[in-house]
Amino acid sequence: MIESHGRIPPINVRVTYALGIVTLFPNLKDKASPTGYEHYYDPHSGQGYLAYRLKTVQRNTTSDFKRSPKSADQHGPKTLRETSTSEQLSGDECREAMSVMKHSADQPVVREKMKATFKHRQSMLHDPDQSSVILDHFPRFLDTPGLINQDFTMLFGQDVSGKFIAKWPTFYKPRIITFCKSLRPGKRHGKISATEATDHVVKFMKVGTSMVTFLDRVGSAQPFLLCVGEKKSSIQKFYVILDQKAIPCVAPTAVAAFDELFKAHFVFAVSYDEALCNFYTFIQTTVYGIDVGTTKESPRVKEIRAKVDHTEV
Image (cartoon, rainbow, N blue to C red):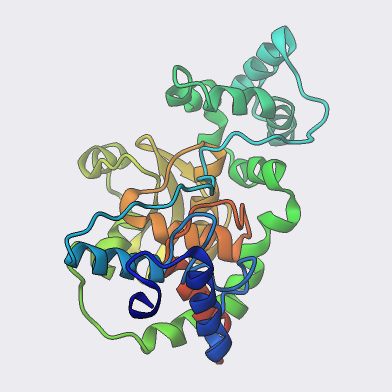
């Protein structure tokens, strides 16, 4: 490309090369992107494998590289979203409902009041002065399973909320396993290993261990999944851990528990673990279909999506 078009090839040339790649090799096309070749070159953000390779070549020739301005928005868990929920309480009525929830043992009443205070809770979560004490104001998250799913569904609707449970076991899991078997083993410089990544997502605690002592010891600023059981092969209970507090999961299955862990990021407006950002972004855009086209994705995420979509099992 540089030999034919100079050190800084025009955008239309880069697009032509990117289009050529996915035309010659259809299985490399990303079905979730507008044209299918954005992971090779995206003319709107100036990113992609071709842009990265050009940058490397230009560095080696001791020339400066000026990145094209990014236009894609970074949409994710911390994005404030407009919802069409009705019958929302405010003012004294909202405060009264919050008080009722704290003292009610009736779960249907708690769920009803949680729905009616949803917008107030979202407002608090996007207020830096109140977001850190959200579980103090809404402590029923800690003893009423299902509230994470309820809030997530109010954010995105039932169709999006059910996508992971519906599609992961039958479509994505077998294809990702097949795809991973084709990868070469090894740890790239600066990247965490699979074992280290797993430890960021899930931790195990043996039954009978003090929850408070365990959580004080492990710390962690980002949400993770806590599995409690006699041994790792026999888990009795799952919890989403947020701010060193345990939120009980609804179902005692790993798939359902991870579904709640992912949703907790949006429900509580918490950023992804930095080391797992690409992993969670893949789950967000590819499986749940949230903010596709507006979320900043690395070329690697787009490439894996394209390969998984074309993997046969």
